[in-house]
Length: 589
Image (cartoon, rainbow, N blue to C red; front, side, top):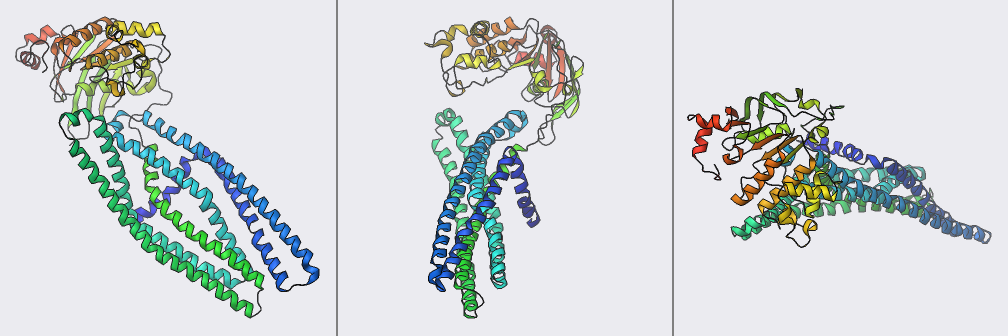
């Protein structure tokens, strides 16, 4: 366990450095400027040493020299101020650059991660990883630039100068400084499990809040407001308790930390007085040593506080970097096949697939053919594998065994994005963006003309209800299309699919939750757009797939039977005929 913690700490900095790759040049420039600045800062205390020595052994003829040294101190401070100004400009540019590209990097990663990742990860957790991780990285960079970088360089320079003044000063400093660092490391190491749990709870609480807000209609309908509040409060109280426990330990350690620093300071002072009495150093040298050591010990204290913050932020940064380095299980082949057009013939050959739940197969040795330009329907009980088949065509999933072919070519040999350009899907729950109807339809083709968008809406039987809104196509539909009915959302989804002009069109239970009137309108829209396309319909309502060229009945991940509506209906012992008996036209199985 201890080895793993050490490995995690060692891996943290390389991970962070790799994450900040776009800013490597800026960071290197920054540290060169910090090194130069810290060397210039030494001139002030050194000139003060010379002035004090001249005053202690004052001679009238040395007055001009003293005044000259004072003038040099003034010039040194002004130059120092100018260098600070330049350093701060570099830091601010660096911070705003990082603030720009880190969230963009995370957004890009999320967009390209497969559907399987998004299905297993809570939305609130993902948002918390990005926001908290990004904020902690910025906090670390600011601390490194303004405190740690200067402090680390300052400590090295101080040790060298103290050794040059007198070896005993350097050895004294070299004894207490490592002792301080070791104790800081050990305390933070003991706090790691508490800190890790606290960050995990931050994500859980974020997920809890997002879920309760997204599902607010259900929460209110079942009067579960108090339950949601209680569950959220419980998580936040756990975070608070762990936070108090963690920082109480840090505060207790602060007393020991201060004791070590005070012992180091007193040792330097006593040693300096002893050396003056012995005549080994001058008063100015003692002032110089005390000035440097005071700054160094104070910097050491600041460094330890940064280490506390680094350990606090490391967990959030690790979660952020884990997201950025998340591996996709859907590999887009380099130089994949990019056809200009496709026929739309699909074939499954001995396909197996599992969601990893108790190793149960969602698809068990499935082989089937979907002819180009035909309407093929998947029906069967829930959990039979219908939607899994459709998602494999889209390459949201890849088979664990077997192969899926498009126009006699393995789907995995196609360029993923070129492949999906030939496809559109209308799901059971159409995802509507919080923008206008026009932009929602045009999502499939943002550059589409007004006429093309409205033509797609007409084909989808959506124009009539759209024109009833005062702003028509410019009507804002609210988050998740809350201002629209289920049937209206489905018709916008169909219009969106039409606008994409796909060769392969998938309807995934597109009418299962609609009233008869909405179903009729959507069925009419579906009939208008099937010509010349390979159409796959996943349905519970068997009334919607009577006209299909082929119906494939699935049960427990296997093909139970295949045929037309008439052929399957006549097979009285078949599953399709049984399902047909269980429903009337328009009823849900």
